[in-house]
Image (tube, rainbow, N blue to C red; front, top):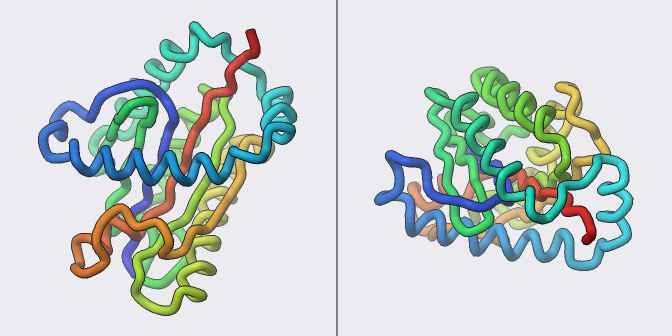
Length: 210
């Protein structure tokens, strides 16, 4: 199964300049799916967020926009020429990795050609470290739901482990597999299935209480 890796960064913003017209609809769809997963991942974990926040530091509310804008600019520079799309929609920033540079078909081991891209992602995450991260795996509907659930968990964990190996603090990272349950496109054709095969990293700024 080819995979599209989507790294989602919660921030404020716009679509990548050369992709605005073609990605507006996709960005809205990704934003809706991201919001739903983010709600599930954070809704009942206030104490955990407080603990993580204490470990990684916080950003004053008024400074969050500037902090995330600078992080977005760093991602754009670091990932230029990699084939990665940067999609911004509301407070979400999504890095979309083409399926041919992430995982081999039906595998959870990261493809060698994807490692340099993940190195760049880790570099930016380490510089902008006042955030906590949800790494969420998704698949298309090909194969059994049970198999897809396990594969989505394994792929999310592979990304987590690689980021930790590149000095991203493990306390910032949580993983979750969603299997085939949250498609962002139709599973009735190859193009839609390719969009659904992805891993998302949601990067949430840790806001300082006023």
